[in-house]
Amino acid sequence: MRALLAFFTVLPVAAPGSSLDDAARRAYLLPLVGLLTGLPGAAILLLAYVMPPGVVATLAVGASLVAAGLHHTDGVMDVGDALMVRGSPARRREVLKDSRVGVGAIGALFIVYAPTLAALVALAEVSPEKAAASLLAAETAARSAMLLMLLFGRPAEKGSSSVFFVRSLREGRRRAVALVFALALPALVALPLGWGVLAAFLAAPVTALVALALARKAFGGISGDISGATGESARAVLLVALSGLLF
Image 1 (tube, rainbow, N blue to C red):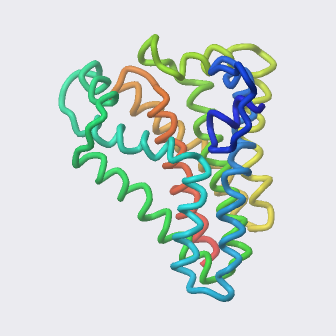
Image 2 (cartoon, rainbow, N blue to C red):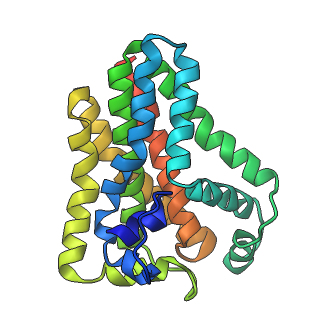
Image 3 (tube, one colour):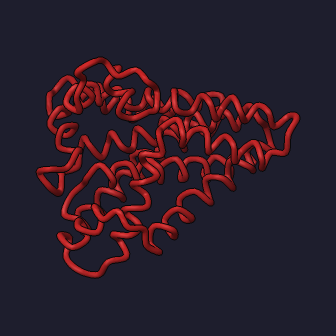
């Protein structure tokens, strides 16, 4: 678990000698990581009683992204640039690994994070407590969508970091536990939100299903960047849905 947290958060918890393979063996617990990355932002949202909701929501989103080390934000940018390329899946995979930033990356940041922030501002204006619960549910949904990608996706390349996780999740018991966590945890976290439970239950699998189809067509499979971008998209999907239900 320490290796998993070290890989997916900025927490200084890595055990000496831990590896990516160690993190992959606990990949079925990935939705729980969302609770940890969401806690700082959820706490900040409670300040909306004494500060402008827009300011608080912006700080809350930033805190959650920083807690994850902005790792998946980088994935959003890389996927955005790669999707702008016309050509074969192999060509898009080349762009996916290119460190340069293009207009696709900037557009992807806006498409993913502008609705995320707008929805959280709307929720904070209605109820800081519900906004905090929504962010926690959205963070678990983000990691659940990533886990579903790793459960059902096929790595596009043998050298992808996703290979370790996909291989680990082939084991029967881990696969079953991962599926239960991915489908159930966001809904459980969203229980205080009433009808929001349904949105929390659907956000991760629907987003992952769309992302799997897109990844297969555009890239020939999944990668770490694609999985991370899917998670960031699932957060946006759920927060937008909850803002519509609770506003």
